Structures are given as C-alpha cells and as structure tokens.
Length: 141
Length: 110
Image 1 (tube, each protein chain N blue to C red):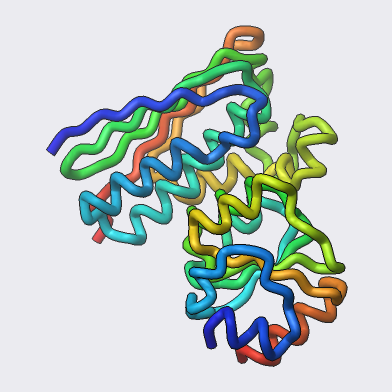
Image 2: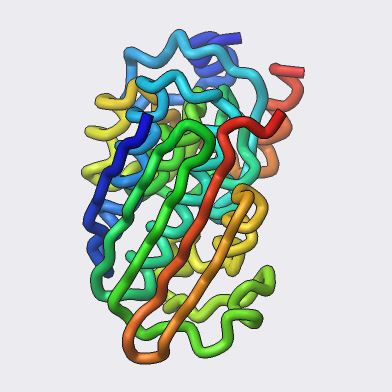
C-alpha cells in the first residue's frame, strides 16, 4: 500500500479550516486504519492546517500513507517563524485578536502536534514560509 | 444516556442536528479554546462552550463528539446549523451560564 493525497489550504479562510483533516479522516477510516492512529493524525493535521489558515497566505498538505507510517507535510507561503523554539512553547502565540476571539491562538497548537506525532520537523524562513513535516507510525505496538 | 434524553431532562433547546439525537453521551468536555478541545476531548463527549461559529462543528465532527451545548442562550451563526445537520451532531442551547449547566450535566451523566 502506498498512497498520496494533496490538499490546498487557504490562508485566512476559517470557514474551510479542517477540510483536509476531515477528508484524511474519511480516507483512513475507509482503509481500516486503527482508530487510535486516526485520532492522532486528526489532531496533528488539524492543528497544522489551522496554523496555515491563521498565519500564512496559502499552503498545501501532502499526505503519504504507506504500510508502516503516515507522513504529513504542510508547506506554506507566509510570514515564517523567526524563533521556532519560542513558538513551540505552550501558551506562546502570535495570533491576531480576531483569531483569539474565535477560540484559536491559545498557543497550544504546536504542543498538540508534538504530542501526537512520532516524528516532527519544522523548518521556516522569515518572509518566505514554513514547512511542517510529521510522521505517525501505524504499528506502535 | 443519549442526547435527546439529556436535552429533555435539562430543558435544552435543540437547534439543529436532529438526526444525531440518539448519539450516546460518554462524558463531557467544557472549554472555549479550540485547541484544548481538539487535544483533549474524547469521542462521544458532549461539548459545552460559548463559541458559536462553524469551526466548532468541524472540531465536533473530527472528534466524533455526541453534541454541542451553547451556554447563556447563545445562538449559532448561520452556517453552523447547516453543518450540524450534515454531520448529525446536535446543537443544543441552555439558558444557564457555563458553571451551572456543566454542573447539571455532570450530575446527570455520572
């Protein structure tokens, strides 16, 4: 088994936030992936998706499903993250007040991602964009 | 207990998602921070919140929640009810503030 999916993520459009996560959840269910794995993928992917919506101008999510792992790569064109270590700290956020009023931007997104991934790598260039690469293993037991 | 039974016992108004009224409630989660809910709520939970926009339904669906309850008589934004109907996740409204309705639901399902 080896499958690839690609989704566009629109910056600033909160009405569509979560679309990729919802599609991927459906696909994984159809593939009979373990529900615990699906839950982890959903949390990590949703948070990464919302980060693009809240902070970047445009982006895409590449999902690669193989027999032993699911790789998720989210690439955006956006402001980038000047200090990734700082951004990883729980409670730290640069979200606008409008975004915070909606209940986003609590500074919990990246910790949610970290808690639900087996591999995580974030690279970013200020003024260019950010790449979040995540992997979740299928056979953890 | 399912959503309909809870709604009737606590006098909650059903706004949308009628097809999901038979959803079984396994527990509850109260929060207005979306990342908190996506990270910590469990499938089958009833979610008590003051957030009334469409993203609430996206999260409820992703987390397989049983229903959403708005506090203080808050009403859903227009596009939210549609999604609630599509996902079969009921939106209920309580006239109580969060502390009160959380307490009532806790007592009822524990």
